[in-house]
Image (cartoon, rainbow, N blue to C red; front, side):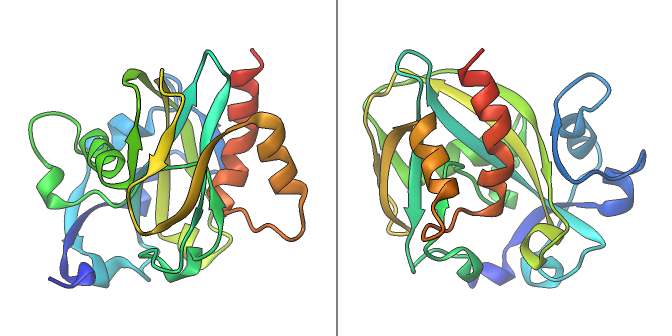
Length: 208
């Protein structure tokens, strides 16, 4: 089946932003619990019908893989085989993807899709210790962001080595926050927008 014929989880923009929209990053709190809002109001639509339809948002579980002992984060460069052409060659420290109908089992389909993406994309030499929602990402400044909404998860792991398993990842490694900062500052390196947006809350967490 063509990827655009698959049904993915979406939420109407008006329902998601019933209390007003935001741009950039918003921390998770009892008053800003978009995860619960999505889980109470989602539906499934054909991906090809919503890929350029800003009246709907496609929630994406976007996970930062962090080793709290080494204070390092898994970062990678997307290959030219990445499913979203607009992200080819860009650096990222977020793992995630669309929530498919097959992810709708007992529990949270966004979280279950995230576990599926992790299994498909990387191989870890350790285990997951903890998973928390750090906050949310919304960026309506470009065509990709206009139809997507990020649930930013922070996944703690005791892994010291994480290797790419998916051909959509060109190269990947555990990097320190200073190394990520250098990539953002390097004009020859293109960092995807969501990773740029997630950098400040990630840095705050690592330096806390």
